[in-house]
Length: 334
Image (cartoon, rainbow, N blue to C red; front, side):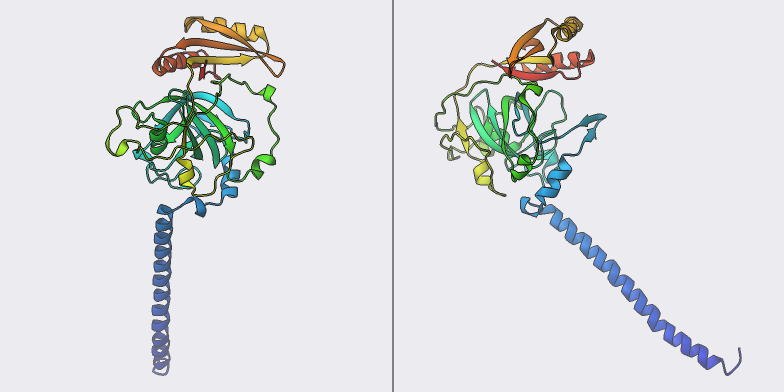
């Protein structure tokens, strides 16, 4: 290197060092900013509440088909949804995790999971065994068990009085959504197209004190001061405000009537199809055809039962599914 180039080279090196340091500083600041953003996102994630969720976006996403363990589920708007069956509940393993709606599951709050209702939805759940009625906000997916129609939060199971037994015979009815405009924009499904199941009848509502569930003690006990709402007959959907947890803990008590458990393997408009399924189920157990008239249309429902316990109903359901009766489900009827 010539002597006249050396000063120029030293000058370039002197200039490059600050630029390099500045670049490294910029990278460090960028890394720090990304790290900070992640921490903020994680912090926000643990505090995600109903108010932080874009309900419209969640609801649209919740109507997309999805697959769990090889089974496809097809959510849809069902303003006339009214079904009887078995409820279960979920708690500690999911406490603090995200629900399908993006909210954080809190076992101490009244919420529920359903396989196909839009998220969020509001349903009325009636425990047909003790008459307790509770309005519940559905914000999660599940239960992914063929024989269960709704999964209650731990608190919901407490209020409905089946925390200890784990399951209960229930009736689930849609009573509204957080934005009923979503329902109004959809075409209602004709009743004749739905395989309706006769549910336990409604009778006049009586207000009663609400003692803790039998055998429940300590923190798990339902406080005697838990409010019991006065009976209200509603002809329009019930809409609850975001975060109206107090409203979600209003429990009513209605008279109970005896119910029976069946496995309904299928429902048909043609007797011949029903008879073929009944014959195929002969290896499972005594099956019969129950004829009902719904909106002036004949329906022939193939059933097994009645059975005394949920465990026996689960067994019959599994056997029915193994015969190829893919629509088989447990129902509660009079």
